[in-house]
Structures are given as structure tokens and as C-alpha cells.
Length: 77
Image (cartoon, rainbow, N blue to C red; front, side, top):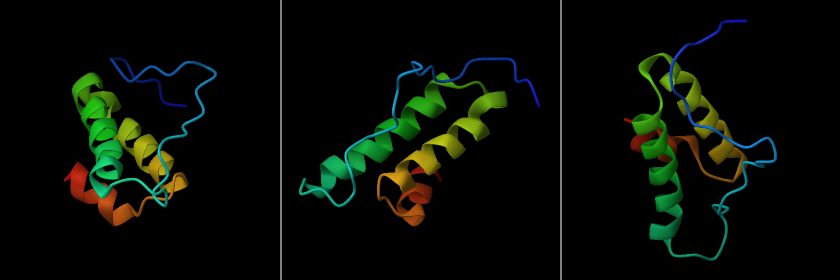
């Protein structure tokens, strides 16, 4: 197991990784905002050593919440 030193996003042990689902009846801008805010938080909080793992966690979490990988990649890139 690789130990990374630096900052990363903290989640409480009870955090469930549940966010606004992509198929919910909300305005598309609100759904895009879920992606934007999680990626922005990962980029601004995580050190460079932890950024890749954090973005992978965000991607997996968003896919589990119904978002398409292509939508997530657009924001990350």
C-alpha cells in the first residue's frame, strides 16, 4: 500500500458519497454544479501527490450517482 503525504479531501467515516442523482428532475445547471463543485474541491484542497486518487474517487462517486464519465472528464480536463 502506497502512503501519500500531503493534503486531501476529508470525509467523515459516516459519509455515504450520495449526491444529487443525474436522473433527478432538477435543472441541468444544478446537476452540472455537482460535478463542478466536487472537482473544484479536489483540485483546490488536494496536494499534487493526492490529486490523482481524489479525482478517481470523485469520478467513481459521480458514476455511482448516474453521471456519465464523459461529462466528468470534460470538467476535469
